[in-house]
Image 1 (cartoon, rainbow, N blue to C red):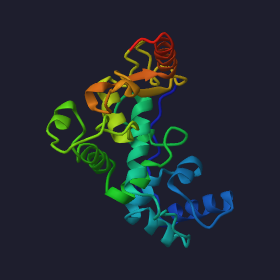
Image 2 (spheres, helix red, strand yellow):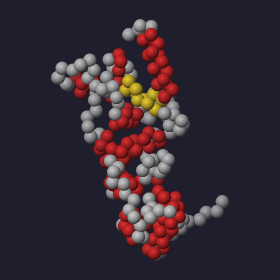
Image 3 (spheres, rainbow, N blue to C red):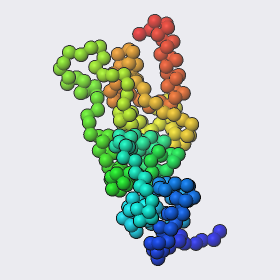
Image 4 (cartoon, rainbow, N blue to C red):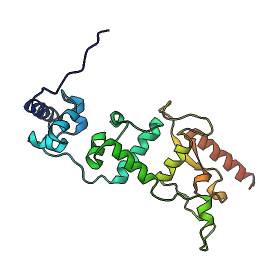
Length: 229
């Protein structure tokens, strides 16, 4: 096995970088290039261009290409994508891991919106923790007259993520997780079934894989058939 150093790009001229960017644009047949497309086909890495020219948009502008920014992506869409990647990996995603098919959006997309990948993660964590999650204690503090159920049955993605994080992104019944087996799909389900009066609160939710969750549902159905409470 031979060892060799990575290519040293500091002495590469601006024109060489821009020529390579326009080459990739011609290769894909469009007048614009995304960071992911360039990283896949370019001679250099996108960070080489962004450091040289300031950001990806300025790189495209200097190369005479169109901007690629999608202004319609909401913060919540970006955060949900981080949640999905975090769930798949079972840990905090790293900069280089934010690529397709694992991630819908590249780390460059997050850099454009939030400045750096680290700041994007900080905003994600801030968003996750920004609102009080429903717990048994918060329900007790409510004074208004409420119907049988004090919470909705549906579990929003933010609460789902917090529950999965509590359970270390693993099925609490069998211990399997997507990080070690990509075919595993995790669900968040009520411990005490919602139909039996269980609330959608942090303490009454658990992480189950799809197989164990179906098994639990079948058991609940049999109990109901037998008339058990």
